[in-house]
Image 1: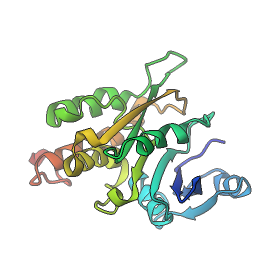
Image 2 (image 1 turned 90 degrees about the vertical axis):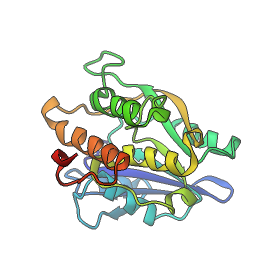
Image 3 (image 1 turned 45 degrees about the vertical axis):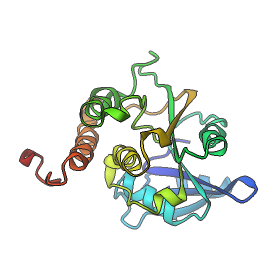
Length: 225
């Protein structure tokens, strides 16, 4: 399935590993809602329909009730079954961990390690410069993330593509960088966008980091930094 503007949210609580599977439809243009519903997932609509990744993730959080929320991008194909238990593992074995980020090899044009251009050229450099305690995060923009609900209740997810960067910085600020674990999940394949489509994502990432480095940074006017 090729999902457009859709995000999976798995919520874990109680005795079962996964209690809820929610697909947030953020203005998708394919048959994602129909296919997801037929497969047993609960589909919820983003309020704005195309409002962005951060908004869709917040809808997912609000639509679930489990003690742990696992965010999964909807454009990974094929989707390996080990992603969910892999992300949950550190939260079960280490009480000091409150968030888990995925790490993996991302190919581009069949070449391993050449994917994730915004991650390598924008996210990792700006975190290394402004938040060096997070320089060890290999995939800061990974959509595959597990977070305790008690943590999510203490913050508001940032809008658009700045959500992953902001979440990392906010969790480290509240609980310390050592509360963030990483798990190696192997190979991750998804649709790669043309370079011209990546500028908005790169801008959102930089805006989220700069705004958290200095509260006086005007998010609407980056030149005021």
